[in-house]
Length: 68
Image 1 (cartoon, rainbow, N blue to C red):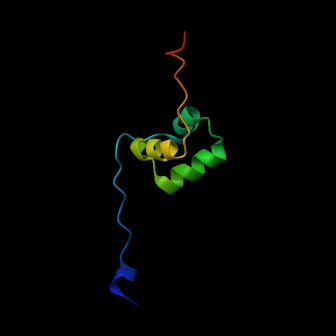
Image 2 (cartoon, one colour):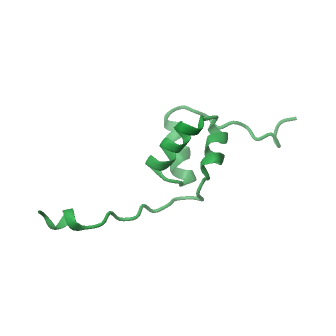
């Protein structure tokens, strides 16, 4: 076994504020299963998840406060 195999994985640095799963799902109109899958795979970082969704060409929904 190599020395690297015994090391614990480094914690991922969270860029930007964290999303909750519900907020992320609502913003991108995702079902709960897909939102959880992406959230656990990529972490709670709003910056990272927004970049992921932009790469998937999935725009966020507009807030109801903006709508007339």
